[in-house]
Length: 193
Image (cartoon, rainbow, N blue to C red):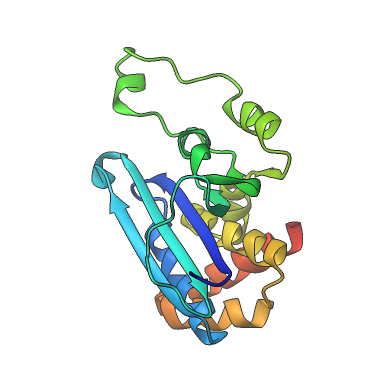
């Protein structure tokens, strides 16, 4: 039987940085001496489809897959994706949602309506829900694409992960030309939580 394993489900749509985020979180866990497993599911990522990363870490991890009802945290880069994956969250789990709406092709074509107040509905179901305008914060830091790292900052603070460990991982993984903006975005997110 597995010992205590932390399960983080990272959900969004193509182009939001979910895969980079999973790499940063996995790197932090490795730096802290944990066994880490990562799984990535790419839907129609290049067309705005769902993208999911699963990061599991602990003293010993045997599988990269998070089962339904086992995620400690869902880190959602888009509102509807938070709702879509809620059945994976533990009853006492936490959800961090970027208050961003990305319209799918059916919504853009008018075939489907984007649900109203979806993030408020998630918050009603999950008491430990935080909703943040991470994209706006990232824009103020210099680039909207750093919204994922704002969310990593919030996640790190919420989980009690030392900022210096995350900054070390960000520095190792993020390309040099985007490093300053991403470190600034991380620090802003870390202050928010």
